[in-house]
Length: 165
Image (cartoon, rainbow, N blue to C red; front, side):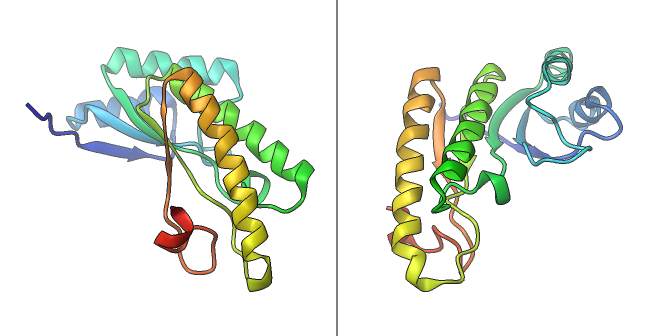
């Protein structure tokens, strides 16, 4: 038997995590797709107290996290050619993968890179993305969570099927 899953996409926790989760629960949602975008109204997964409060709110409401969208762009660019910045991005994604596993998520969705207007850099950016994804896949396997790569709009690494496979 195949169960139907209707995830609700949760990006902001306004005014509080409890109230956001309670509203989705009251609306009949059973699963959430959580987004870890950065900003004051988003879940700060690096803040242990806020993360614990969110987990407790989910448990009280009986909601499950189906998937988590990892942070994207800027400091989270998995395709950057600057090796120290790429390592920092991978490290941040590792933290997000580990946090997502504690929530019981089935998968973490990552983005293969930020905008790449210089076509001459595409091969190197693809290689950097491949290296980053290899490192992240190892961590995802370790914690028992799926790793999904989102297809991207034109001008970004991962904007074609050929780049994603």
